[in-house]
Image 1: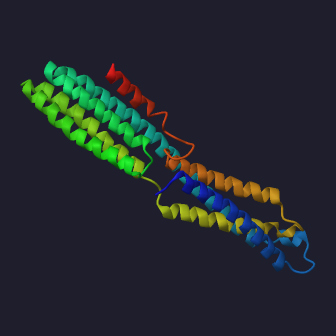
Image 2 (image 1 turned 90 degrees about the vertical axis):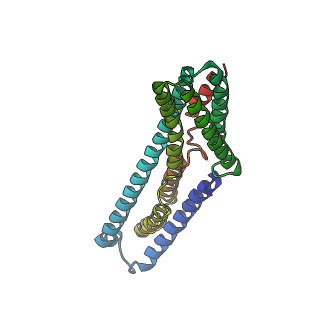
Image 3 (image 1 turned 90 degrees about the horizontal axis):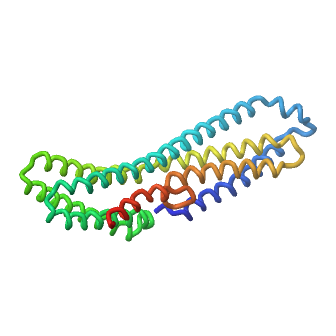
Length: 263
């Protein structure tokens, strides 16, 4: 199970390994330099330069692709929260079409349902509490559908039945859409590929510093930090209920809907 600690450890491990790999690349380059070779001789090695350029281009494309995908997914999750709030609000208002005696119990179940949805999101991802709240919301869905359609049928009005059933159906469908969106992430191989290519780039970066008598630790640390922080931000956006980049503020719409139902 992915947690905030897992994401932090992954990024910290990458940061340390990048520094170590740059150091190894530097010493490998120093060992392979010809005795008496000048800096100009080292710069003439176009082969290494072409390979380094290709690797850095590749890692730039990979980072750009995964960052764009994470940002799009983050925005989509916020939009889906708004869609769910709209669907619940519409279905709740359409209860006015039913008989007065049927409205009160249905509104009570609706409030319980929305609370169960909020409990599902507030609990840690993949935790027993989240699973319990989700199962409770499914039971309340069944109760809402049964009681809502029965009350609509009792009106003997086809239009009311259609409006009520369609609103309830939209409310329930969005939960499946949100569940799929929450579980949709780049394959693990993408992160492993980023990890591997980053280490290769670090090795070549260190190798390219071999013409200098001393390794540039400032450049090394900045290089490692840039890659590690970027990867951390990508993973943080992919799991927006774990780290610093969160969709909790968007949930405020659902909280306000629940508060409105209680007044």
